[in-house]
Image (cartoon, one colour):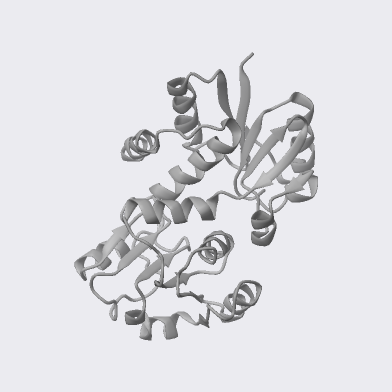
Length: 276
């Protein structure tokens, strides 16, 4: 019998997840299908009950439901609980278990796409919202020397550092981070600044960027933001958000099926779709 997987969120119409997952199911010979489920915020509890009642094998969760699903699950992975958001649910014989593959997916994409070890690296994370939380807590599980947070609202960055590891992390305003930019090996934008349609905006100035470092942006529309273009012009290696999208999906796929999909194929499909 064909298993059912899917994505719950609001809205979900433009998601590229079905493209990635359905192709992987076919290529691995897994009898399954991935669907989109648009769930209004007040219906989250009913939707999770539906996952259980209908025997849906697993779902991804996207904005704005990642924190909201947690009270309705039987178990939440420790990392997901720490982040405060679930983006993957596994139906284990009626027991719903929540995970967060966003942060681990980002870290895996960074290491593999940029061919870099994070050991002893000094990293600056721009932003302190949901995207930053997943990435920050996942980076803390690496051997990076420092993972600092810069945010427009300094109090929010301070709160995140206190929840994380104040021994390995500091927090700054964006202006202060700009002054310190040359200290970092890797700079990561986790905000939506520069995303379509506001493509001229940049999260912070790269004037003091040290050449040879890595500048990464979780945005994938456009695939190369103005900020990444400037970083490249200043001698940095750059990475867009396609890798995070693909690897978080691949990690979810592995949790559901026990099999690792062809990430290069997934990435190719996503890039082709974005170009269209």
